[in-house]
Image (cartoon, rainbow, N blue to C red; front, side, top):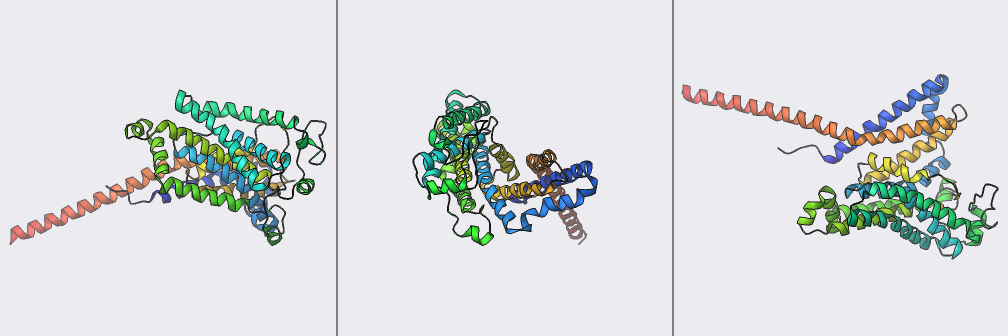
Length: 387
């Protein structure tokens, strides 16, 4: 019996239910912490991205790296791997892009290409460990997150150009940042072009990064759904041993899958820090952008096209959370946004429930049709025997 419900419809319903659950939970938290401002606060959370062109520009600005890290996680998911190392790949990609445009004064597009290389390296190593030594990619990815972070911190502290007063003076706590005006003056071609979008929306946040990310998402969708290479990758994800039996090189595809996933996350780091507004600061904690890619992928059911919309939604919620202050503290806002984001992980569970429910309803309908058909056949036979 064929299932008449389209898989995309089920995935969309699962994601929508998960979003509603997260929003209801977030509203409950607002009621608990400040009942008087809960309703207007929730209204601000859900409408801030549309209140001004500057807020809308910020939504697009933040969605570009979110989309890339979400694509990274989704691509690995499609091939049966869990790329929890997206944050390390994102960090190294950001570092490679900054070295390109500051240390070597290369244009922004060269910085993006080197960011892709940096992320690919951090994805390649866990891929090799998985393919050749059967080491779980989750373990190696987590370890390389920290390796990437401290390698970048150590490297920046020993690269005078990245710490020079022209790019952001060294503070007492040894933090460093690239400040936009001086950064652009040093290398005018270092930042991603705005193509007049900043004037259109009246915000310096806006550039073509989000369109680059969307284009990459479309390419990944085409590769996964319209090429032999994509079919082989998904086949390895379904069953590695059956793929080997069918003549597909599973080890090669595992390595390529993690390498491509790492490259996607690395591009996200380049898109964010070459925007001309973001500042890289040396910290001792992992960057959250890579981890936020996980719920982006889950909310989209690992569909490359779906990640476009889920990245925009999560960025929209983050921008709305900024308007909840001062009625709510920054920590409460972070909790609410985190709950909304991470409840999206239930989309996978919801998808299973919805599929079972629809299948059961369809089975009942088919049984009723069979009963009706059987009854009509019996009636026809009775009439013929009576004649």
